[in-house]
Image 1 (tube, one colour):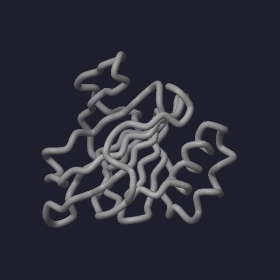
Image 2: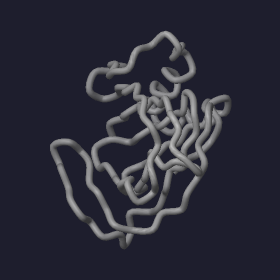
Image 3: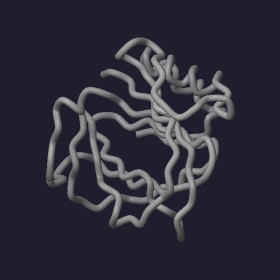
Image 4: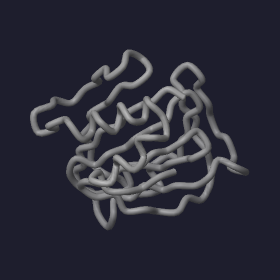
Length: 148
């Protein structure tokens, strides 16, 4: 997993060509003019989902992981905690191979994501997004899905 500010994203562009495309999309897009929805960057290999939601309690948020896609999560506005933990030794609860997600039971460590923060979550990284800091708040986020 990687957590950093968007202005440092060029440091990670050499991880893979597809990750570089996703980071380039985040850097070059004016999200104040982009509506909620899904946007193709490179077909089904790299695409972005612009989302808006209200954060919830930690207990209401699920610890999730993916096997076919890497997530690049970028906070356009607002702030949230994202719980993170390695997939190793975590108890699998449910899995949906077609939708490329699985939910786990486990204890994650909370990291604060605020406007301008991004995270790259690989298949061995479980993440628990949407957690409010002290109370519920509105978050606008982009999740770029990058095929492994």
